[in-house]
Length: 344
Image (cartoon, rainbow, N blue to C red; front, side):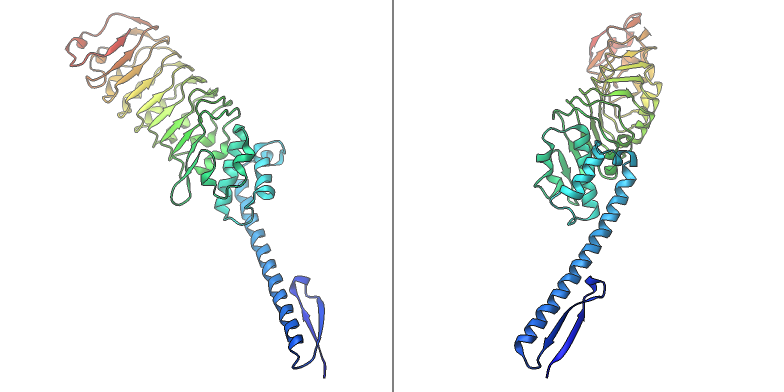
């Protein structure tokens, strides 16, 4: 006696797509049926995986929309659009990584493309772990903590998307390149930043009052750029700052009088700018200061008598030449335990 068995596969939207006629006690028929059932299960699993990937892809796109503008994503020539296309269509590991991992890869790809890292294809293809990509360092949890692309023949701009790493990024080094454009808002949002090296590039624009966000910063190197405007007073809120390097720019205006609030300042270089006004007597409040370069500006007036105790009596280098200063050296310098190397 024969039986007709109809099986419906949900992958086919409920339509029966195969009918089996089997004979009871037929081992061959039972094997055929078992293979059929396995195939249905595999197709159902594939459907579930597709749904999961679709959900992950949707979450990924939502996150990308939060850090990149629709204008940039819609522009096929932009770094953001190219990074997204690579992530969704060309990344060898697309669809297999978590949303956070994919976001790391997207953001780093945007940085590479925006800065025009040479031979970028070689950096993006073949390495599953983005923590091993050029210039990228992660902590044990896989969070990006350093991006170091110094002297890498970069010729583009720093993208604002870098702010995606704000919760973890501690070091950024894009120095010794031909980076153009201004410092983006995204860079000012890196509140965990400890070291920022952007010297010897071609940055333009002003130094924003948003520097106050860099509360953990120890080293700020912005020398030898094309930055303009005044040195923002808010920079003196960086109480942990030890090295402040702003030489060879086009800063103008006064040296902030609240500079004495920077109690950990060890090295100050404001030389070769267009700074005006008098030397701030408050600088003597920086008791840990050992190196101060104020030369080649338009500073005027006398040298404050408090400079006789500059650096808590242990200043090593002090240059004030090529300004418009008047008067002589403070008499207090005659009582110093250690005389600085001084150029006036």
